[in-house]
Image (cartoon, rainbow, N blue to C red):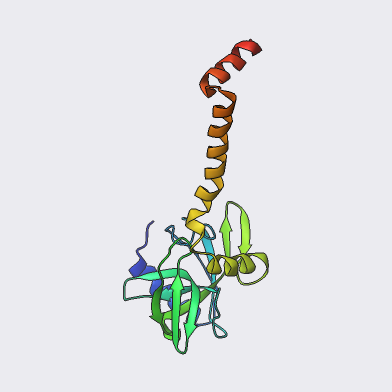
Amino acid sequence: MIITCNEIMPLIQSALECGQCVKMTVNGYSMLPFIYDNDVVKLEPIRSLPIIGDIVLVKCSEERYVIHRIVGIKEDAIFLRGDAQLNYEGPFTLQNILGKVTKSFHNGHIRVHNRGMWKLVGLIWIKTYRVVPYTKSLIYFPRKCASKIFRLVMGINYRAYREMRTKNKN
């Protein structure tokens, strides 16, 4: 059975307003690498003022809800960003925030997002988000260059080298 967002979100909102915790399956990739598509998240009602680094469920419009991380608070304005995104969303008010993600369940592992290691890593992620999209290329570029330099210096064609090794093993 598939239930649309318009049907289920009012129920989730009313449960959170009554002080109940809610588990729901999320879809989308905006919170990678912390929350994956089809992960289950545990939402708790907002009991205190949210702070930077909290992952919250926000009602953006009548038909759009997002789970994103708080990256800025200025007076009554709250700004959000998905961990896999570069752009901010907002401003939002406290009335737009429906609940706070405290845990996520991914491949049998539980991640506690409101304290401990995952909270710390989330805060570091906020500060380094402009570097993150380039980390893969920063890691692989030196390896690629080193491999090419090695082959040039040694005068070896890698395919020929690999073929020679497989022949010697046989």
